Image 1 (cartoon, rainbow, N blue to C red):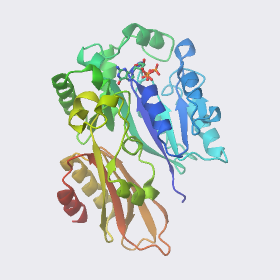
Image 2 (image 1 turned 30 degrees about the vertical axis):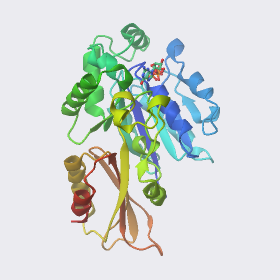
Image 3 (image 1 turned 180 degrees about the vertical axis):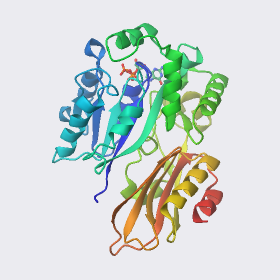
Image 4 (image 1 turned 60 degrees about the horizontal axis):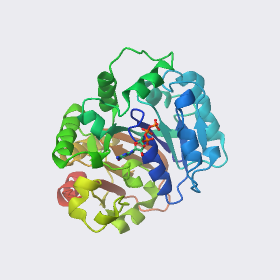
Length: 353
Ligand SMILES: Nc1nc2c(ncn2[C@@H]2O[C@H](COP(=O)(O)OP(=O)(O)OP(=O)(O)O)[C@@H](O)[C@H]2O)c(=O)[nH]1
């Protein structure tokens, strides 16, 4: 089986900063071909235009597939599947698929749609990233412009219009594999800490909460792509990012109050493992115990000629056999990504156990 294309769902209310985050991601994709599927809403849907105009090589109009009607989650069988099939039929296959949704409906049906025959063999769910408007959530409003979100909701007859935003927000948090608290620049340090702590306690065990300003996060943190490029990632060690305030470009001590967290990555190798599902459970335990953001790579399983691809973000651990090792050494090689300060020695020991 060829390597599957990872698909990341980016969710969050109108104005949370999804488009800003995705645009930053496209501009820093380093030649990776990212296809976007955008969930459009009539007059309010300006995302397609914004992205068409971003002027990036990796962001051509043909990559943008706008769904014709309303919520992606409510129209999965009618709309989403053909869209994906169309994308997968292209000669010029994307390296990664990003699906932006409004957060007005649960993404679970969307995630389940990846099990569809013909899609499940070609695409794997990389994870659900929930983008949060830090300021609005701290203020108990949940969205910057509540009236605009309500108008967006009213336009789609498939959505119920009564559920309070607070409940929809809870759903977004509950389904997240990673939470991005955006607009951190609009929060004082103590407010940011309180919000991060609260979201951590409200989300599933193992979900990491990262802070961002203008959605500026390293692509390797957002997307589980580039499994084949471990060596490159290792060479960089510290995952760099772009600051939005020139004045803190050299001032990492203030990264927490101005920009976002700093990240690190390292590689753990080990010999063959005996049981794939037991190892996935072990990885999951290590992720939770050490607050790891992402873990990805290849695993050699005793008696299996194929290598096992492993991708994990927060509590989500995905494995499948992709290709024979061939002449490559039968070893397990995993990239660990997290905020700076990971206990590399302990994580290495735990993964090698
Ligand atoms: N201060 C501040 N503003 C931000 C930040 N991120 C985004 N914004 C602004 O917030 C507004 C909404 O951002 P978008 O990226 O369009 O939000 P969205 O979630 O994609 O919303 P739609 O695309 O309209 O559904 C824009 O005016 C952004 O410039 C941030 O971190 N800090």
